[in-house]
Each structure stands twice: as C-alpha cells, then as structure tokens.
Image (cartoon, rainbow, N blue to C red; front, side):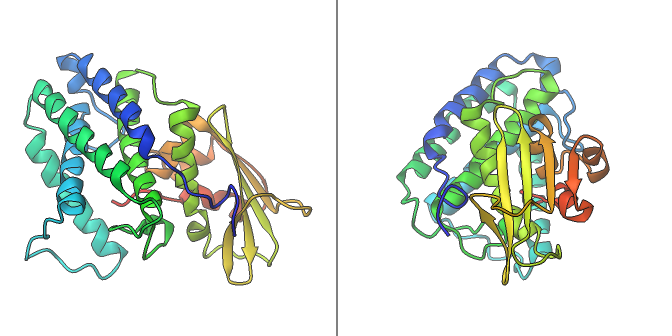
Length: 282
C-alpha cells in the first residue's frame, strides 16, 4: 500500500534543529534544575541528559563504526530479552555519565549529537537498517524508519526534560508531527490481537496543531494503516490531546491516567487499544 499512511518519514534533516534546542535548553539550567525529578522513574534531568549522551555514543560505535558487541553479550531470543538488555545498558550508561558535571555533559553532547546526525544524513534511507524497529513488529526495517525511531527517542527525552523544568520549545508541528507519525506506525502491530471484521476501520485522532488523524483498517491478514477511513463509519474513533499523546506511547502515562483524558466513540475495546501501545524499547 502506498500513500501518506506508509510513505517514508524523513527525519534526518531535522536532527540539527532538535539538537540545537537541546543544547540551548541545557545551557540555561541552574544547579537545581539539573537535579529536578522527571516523569522517568528515578531519573533526574541530569540523568536524562546523560542517557542522551550514552545512547548517541553507543549508536555511533555500533552502527557507524561497527564496533563488535562484547563477547559475553546475552543472546536475544525474544522481546523480553531485548527489553532486559536495553534497560541494563541504559542503567549502566546513566550511572557512568550521570557523574559528569552539567558543563562537561553539554560539551560532550555537542560532539556526539553532531556526529550522530551526520551519520544519519549519510545513510541511504531506503537501504536496510542495522536495527529493526521492534515496537512496530518489524524483524527488518529500512534506514528511514530506524532513523525516525531515533528521532522520536531524542525528541521525547528532551521533552521529558522540558516538562520537568517547565520550558516549551519542541511541541511544534515541524518537530512533533514526525514523532507522532512515527509512533503511530506501530498501530497495526499494537492492534494485532484486537478482533474485528475485514473492512472495519479504527480512527485515531491527535488533537492540536501538531496532530492529525490516522486510520487503521482490518484486512484478511491483519490490520493495516489506510489513507482514508472509507465510506463505512469507523467502528471506533479515539481522540487524544497532543500534549498527552507522546507520554502515552512512551510509558509516561498509565492506561488509567490516559483513559480519563481521551474520548472514545464507538467500540470501547477497539478504541482504547491505542492507549496500551508502546513505541519504545525498555
């Protein structure tokens, strides 16, 4: 299927703007700001910045430089193994880089972010990626999708910092809409166990200037994104405020918390399945 629902999301040219806003933000923080709690359990603002540094350096080493994983790296035989590995790597990275001063973190992030975005810009977006986007149910992904996945990672972690220190700046159509579009490519996988008749449509509407409407159609072999809802009314339409959408898809808001802020018209089970969708690993 072709069209807006499945066309590539080209985020590589957006990293420079997003990275610039991160550095500008971090440079304004005082000592108290660095230590503020965030919506990430047990992580402060400084620890999220440390995580952004750690993941950029790891990505450059493994993807760009083809550094071999440690010989004692655990085997990945399922989603649970991958989640445990990612959580362990993240915790170790935050422990190490979280000991650095804010000034040193900013200096290192300048270099790491620059090299990472140059790497993404150098890739053929239609070539096979080193890493598959597992939360979308893919065993193999193209570079554009893997790059867009990384963009969502760096966007939502920066937004977690902004939420903690009450600074706006990246909840804009130019930067946030591609994040939402990437997240919602996970809809077919998230709905794989939701029963419906072939031809049934579920619509997900993100309200606000950064949002839009995404349609999911039940096909004989499973669910698929569609460009239009079609002539038959959707069996469910869910409306999510844009301010909460990113938190729902990144484990920043529980199902029960989210349910109180969204509107579901039609089939409750089909309409609320999107609130259980996760677009991160870990």
